[in-house]
Image 1 (cartoon, rainbow, N blue to C red):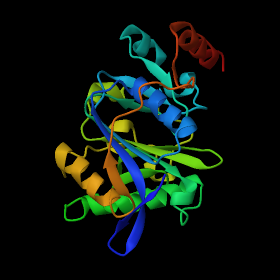
Image 2 (cartoon, rainbow, N blue to C red):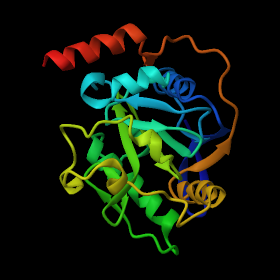
Image 3 (tube, helix red, strand yellow):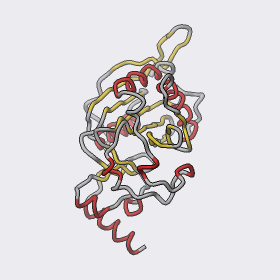
Image 4 (cartoon, helix red, strand yellow):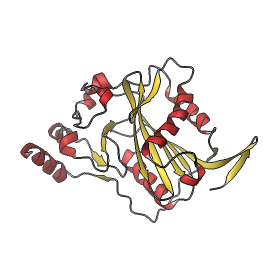
Length: 257
């Protein structure tokens, strides 16, 4: 908490942590602990994760969202995270950016998913300004034109919220085959398969430029302070790895349905 005078304005403070290759389950668990136990604002950036993982929203059903047989054969971890949103497959080509904010420090942002996404889209519109990218927020996604490159999810508590995004800087075509086309898809998807629906950021911006510009754009809202993560959390996070038994049961339920 707290503010710092910047020019004529007193901006709220935000701790920033930049990581590289941290396992996505570990990142999600850290973020939930910060949301629930910290009183500070945080910006967490993780440049890639160590290996492919499928990450579902808190209410996601594996049987409806994941091609379970090849996932089990290829030993792709499936995680249920603590936030809402859709299903993604992430790997070393994914860049993760998370904002954890006190509602009182962003009083102009109504604490609901759409206003939060609209607020964050203003940050990323600055990031892509000056590039050839046709950046937009469409429904719940960040897109270039009509193709998605960033998926968003939130969790909103009494006094705080988290908004996190998985950005596809690049992706492996094979990995997309592990995901089913969800029954509830955004209208603009128009029943396109994954490879016609998504696109990489690498055609428009380098990884380092994206991270540096994201930090610079965040400075228009917060006074940033680079810091280390707390080392000991007194909290048990809820994001978890699904077991083989759970995945097999989901597959059986789907086949019966």
